[in-house]
Amino acid sequence: MSVAHIEQLERRAEFASITVQERLAAALGVAPGVLFEIDTSLSAGEAAKLAGVSVPTLLQAIESGELRPLEPHARPSSADGLPAMMGAFEAAQLAGVCRRTIHDAIRKGRLPATRAQDGSWQIEAEAAVTFANSKRKIARHRIPVDEVERWAAAYWSRRASAHVQLRCDHCGRRFNAFRSRPGGAHSYCSQACYLAVRRAPLIARAGGCGSPTCRDPACTLDPGSCHRPGCDEAAHVAGFTAARHRWVLGYPTLYCSQRCAVLARNKGLPWAKALAAFKQAEGLIDVKEAGRRLNRAPAVVMGHARRLGVGRKVNGFGRTGSWLFSSDDMERIEAYLATNAMSQKHEDPFFHARWCKGRFGSTRAYGKRAAEIAATRGKKVGRPPLPPAKVERILELHGRGKSQRQITLLVKVSRDQVRRIVDPARQSGAKPPRSTL
Image 1 (tube, one colour):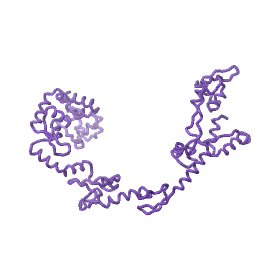
Image 2 (tube, helix red, strand yellow):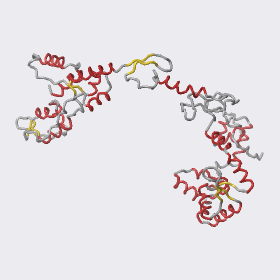
Image 3 (cartoon, one colour):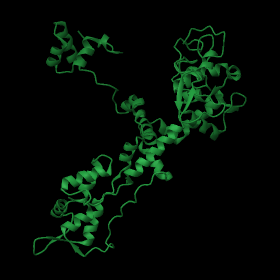
Image 4 (tube, helix red, strand yellow):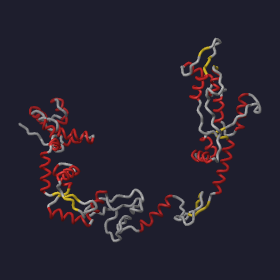
């Protein structure tokens, strides 16, 4: 019986050193007093199971010094006074395995060894130490059973003395706690009671529509509707409680989406109407509209405007101000784009699509400018139309009562092509072909 087998018997036995010794003595047929003394120890997981606590709690006790584990066994080394050569039995004892494991390692080439004249294996000390260190698994913590029982008794005694009985401030139910309540603090028996207390004042201050987010007591909107004028959608229902925003779990908020919230906020700002009136009176447009006219991004329009010194930044409208452009400014930018080499390349659909793919890693520009790319090749976007002869043949067979599947087999075309001709109403945007009959 190897040392590894004895350790396995220790781990599998009930957590009592006397029981382990008695079982080993009965298995070996000797008296328990004659049997060598076994220092029964447990791993951290086994000790936690015996003490009835979690593994993190046990490890915290070890780190704080309340629970004293055994010193870990040092790994074998060649400086331990080992002989230069040893047999398979000595190598098995060094590695903590059985002799068969040593023989298997020698046969598979993992442990170099030589045969002696008497047939036994001879293994060098360095090779045996290297193999032993690869096989021996040093546990992080090994704790004696007596030490675990002592610590568990002290731990649960301390926990029992820390029990106090409190009354929930919401439902009034009595409950036990492990820590005493500090002066002036509230006690709740569950998280549900705590959240109910937090939500109660928000629900009490709800508006006339029933939404806690609404601050108008005289609100006449239907419960759960969006508060933006002209929007008939249902308001977004809060998925959590946030006292700062007056959101309550399960209750509707003010708006149905973020877009409606932004539109309602901007519409009510004092400078929104003034900015719209100023733009209309002066005949100016903002950078977004300028980008749509020039087919450029707003950031690109701003770069050209700074380079040419055009545009006006009007302060007083919002926190960041607004850039506005007149018709003369747009003409100067368009003239610059017409003479700029890079802007002329932008009009090339191939160059623009390749640039977008290299810059953003997306092929979306190929789809947007597919018609222009096809036109440069003398083609059209989409599947080419059928020859007039096949169209006439399909209409003739359809008039004779043939099914679409039969027409597909006779004319050698796809069923979708047949459907587009005989039933154009089912195709979105498709027009019936002109018949020459």
